[in-house]
View 1: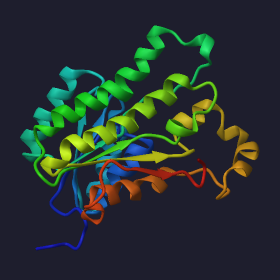
View 2 (view 1 turned 45 degrees about the vertical axis):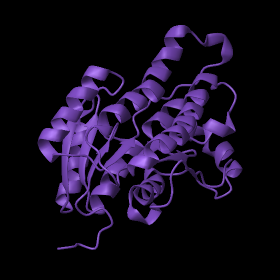
View 3 (view 1 turned 60 degrees about the horizontal axis):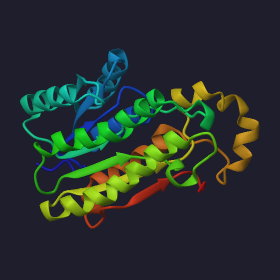
View 4 (view 1 turned 180 degrees about the vertical axis):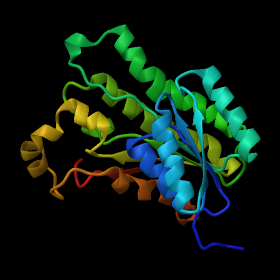
Length: 249
């Protein structure tokens, strides 16, 4: 029997879903009827809270530990998802690391720390997820407004998100014939633990007046865009970058 929910009967994986934007996305997918694989790297407590929130609202969710910057972990994760759910319909590549440093402080180690997770990890996760996905699947990559806004001091992080946008467009062309759509959501300034760690929240009086809608975004502002791209509502969209930024470009 249909529940009237957009994602009823679908199986979704959200990487990096124990907190922030990932947690909001997982919760929103669960609210729309998807069974959610809640991935976390280290915060088991956070992932368990997300699972509890989904299940207490009548949904289905299971937490899975894996560092999606490591191929062996990704392969183990997909094996566990296959055993638990049998397949995968929706992949949300949300896991990532944020840190900006000026040009003089960029090192090979720093570069690889950012790119190995934000770019290579996304590619490898997608490769392995495709083994569980059939026609009608949807992949949503969480990119960032910095992929085009390119603020100073963020060459490595900014370029990692530019790479995500390029990968999105390329994978959309490769996977379209298989009936799998690939899009990205590009958030603007969103209040997360990562943003708090930058000290930017402490400078709200300076930051907020520069935002057209007059406030910093919340994780719940991003989640509906991901639900939209994961659902049949966007069935003729692929290779797109959907900006959710409060007007900042």
